[in-house]
Image (cartoon, rainbow, N blue to C red; front, top):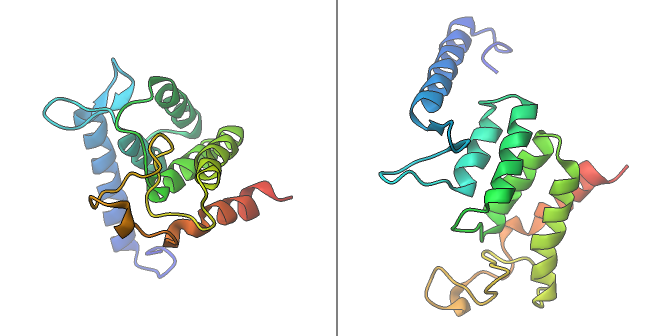
Length: 161
């Protein structure tokens, strides 16, 4: 955007920052032995970390696809239990050329919500525990959340010809 606006100095500054942050992430957060980005005192592999680095474009499309395939196989805990995180996971799959995986996950996650009786999409949903709540009671959960549009966004933009 800075380039479009003719702010070449700012564009260069941001490009340099991206380069430095990418190098730092590979130096300090990439665990080549495990093949994952890790964080914390006891290095944790999380779904979210891998998704954010894929979306950030730290690796190219093919390497990102391999990273996401390893992630699916490793299936680390905790699971993703919000439409928010599942939305970005699907976007990462699509950006990495894994369209079939993205559609399968969309059907798995939001389909399980429908199977649990949803007629709108919820703020939190754990297919293994449909009554889960981060608030101590499912009565406080939102049952018509802003992320309800996610399946329709992906279907319309990626799966309709």
